[in-house]
Amino acid sequence: MTKALITGITGMVGSHLLDYLMKNTDWEIYGMLRWRSPLDNIRQHIENINKKNRINLVYADLRDTMSVDHVIKKTVPDYVFHLAAQSYPKTSFESPLDTLDTNIQGTERLLGSLRKYAKSAKIHVCASSEVFGRVSKEKLPINEECTFHPASPYAISKVGTDLIGRYYAEAYGMCVITTRMFTHTGPRRGDVFAESSFAKQIAMIEAGLIKPIVKTGNLDSLRTWSDVRDAVRAYYMMLTINPTPGEYYNIGGNFTLSIREMLSKLIQLSKHSGITIETDPERLRPIDADLQVPDTRKFQSHTGWQPEIDFGTTMLDLLNYWRERVKSEKSFLTR
Image (cartoon, rainbow, N blue to C red; front, side, top):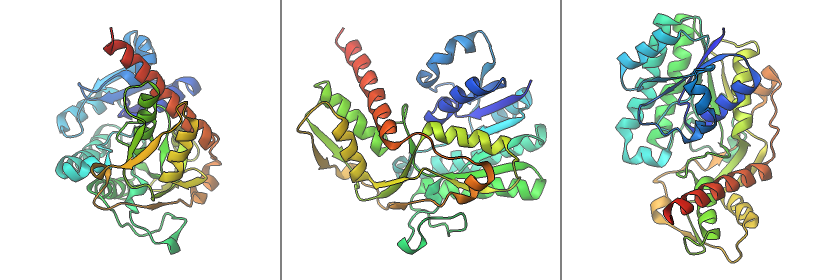
């Protein structure tokens, strides 16, 4: 049976990729996670995991070479989706060394292990659109050859991730393909990201848990938005439709608007009238990548992929996700 390894399976993207692979393939799936990783995002699959029905959890830490080697020797995957990372840009300003170790050296440890034990695997290395950082308007939309100008320790770490992936393809003939995914969101998005933080606050306002004020950071950043469920479909297509070793792709949606306009959309979807906004200095980054608009023609030409889920649906699904979580946690707290 074909075997796939997803690093970071309990994250937003990893869990949606698990959903997609379970529905659209007959692969045996191994999900790599740390012992303390919460299982909430893969809860619907727990029964299958317990029965070892196509899904297996394997424990490792990207900062621990021996544990990564153990996982690769045990699984010998045919496909690898490397999604695990310290993925929060704001956190990276406070923990830069942890971010660099996890993302750069962690990718090196994983690819080094795959070179030893599963060299023929088809490997997706997930970098980020943040590698482009501060881009002038003249360079929009951003294509794959745009100069890197990272604007956070996280973005710097993803430059390293990007380059390591391409290095392994060129130096060792491995089928490593790198993506720079632009802003993607949806249900299960962590509340450290702007749109999910706003949706969570609105859900809490609707539940009467906080005052009708949404606290924000920089609202002027311009983003092109896509749905996480479209993103994981893109990743699957990339590794299964004529995968080209060493290639690198920008992937993103086709709907562009500012953080401010995105927040306005969420407020329009709210059941509560009279919501106001307030800038919270703690939510501002020292420097921001404020123009994130991709040119995705290279990837679309290669795979035929197109985004299918519209922005309004993504925002409503995100808000409903937080409504359910707030309802559940409020019920638990008031027992």
